[in-house]
Length: 445
Figure 1 (spheres, one colour):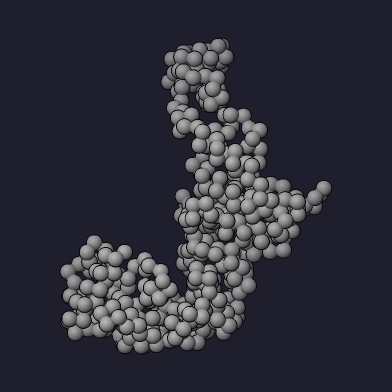
Figure 2 (cartoon, helix red, strand yellow; figure 1 turned 135 degrees about the vertical axis):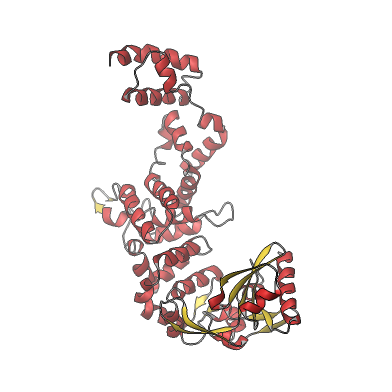
């Protein structure tokens, strides 16, 4: 990342040489103060977008009406934004009018104090108009100025406050927190696509369980994800779930994800874990004990509805719903036939299913016997053994005298089963077996 910083410094230097003020701004300054390496470097300047585009050979005018230009420099992209103040938010997101102004006024229009810091890389000077450095030291998320005004401008900032609090393990400052609670009914004025993106960032970041609890405590959860909110207080059988209710279990499972690898989970895995027990509230019943019969089937339907609302792509929805639908199928794994087990290992979502199963177990009874068995099985088998090429195809069936029809599917599935069980190992054996078991039946049809 040193190259990125060096290039960003050169952009600042070039703007300064042209007579403009230029500073590092926002998240990169915050991250550096916290001892973290910035993922990227944003630059704020007194230069207008037109002046920026004249100074740099390769630029992209992504948001000129808001003073934002992308500068392509040394193989990377850098956002260069003109100092501005915003007026007249009419859609809960974008200002109706932008006025180019000073660095101080630019800081005062930003969302949270920790994101409103500037840094002069040439003079090695922090520029802090909003006590952002103090809030970082105090580990506090606080809006710049009046929280109601900040949230009125962009309602999604309420969810962003939760994300930052979870990401940095900070507390939300009292007046900011109270404003979120009072203003939470307005969050659904934001487009569902933006809400879905923000929830995805929360679920793939650190302290996911804590973030879910803050969303619940601020009433944001019941507005955005009422299906998840309904998990709160739904009891589970203590023998299998000593951790508590369905919501508590889900929070813990989210936090257990990818602990072995030390990485953050993919959005598919994280959303699947969030929703894996979403079918429990509507299937709750007390028989011989508390039961949730068929909750994975009901949960898959609910998950599809939730994911459509959050505007996730069709491919992600399909994978997430498959994981939710399949998550109870691991239980009889040790008693499965070899062919059934190999078909489980073949599933494109299997690795995510396996990781979610591990987190599911660690968030409840803690028994990883099935996880260890499946992991060992996966490691002991080659890809060829798990998903071997077919020994026989439809054309082969025609050649031996069978008439095409619904029976073909039955025959090919039966051969696959025998192959996965190790009972057939060559095309010749497969043809001979089919001829002996189906040829008379096939020609008579």
